[in-house]
Length: 119
Image 1 (cartoon, rainbow, N blue to C red):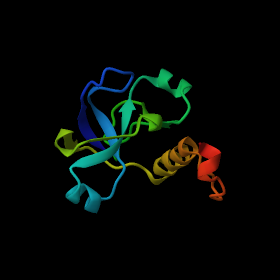
Image 2: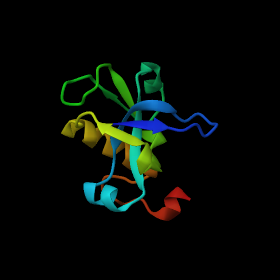
Image 3: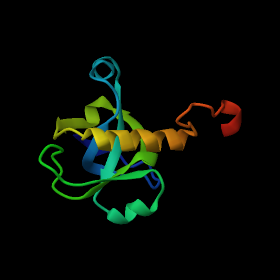
């Protein structure tokens, strides 16, 4: 979990300084100019959208408020926009995010969905 400064792109995306979950390895972060993140919001009504995950505040996450991981807004940001680490995501939260990503991408647990099914 990190603080990130999200620039406005003119759409419905999150913007401004906010917590986000880094969704790539430390090795990737060390070699790539971008960082793959899932932005968070404290607007709990975002749970009405599919592909979101509720996160309770906890000292381990660094979150002070109940938050929603906006999995459907996963994006790559310039590494220079990623600031201080604030905490870590619980394993069950990470698993829930993976499930939402797989559903978003049309991938089933048994990996039987083909590209033709998606197109």
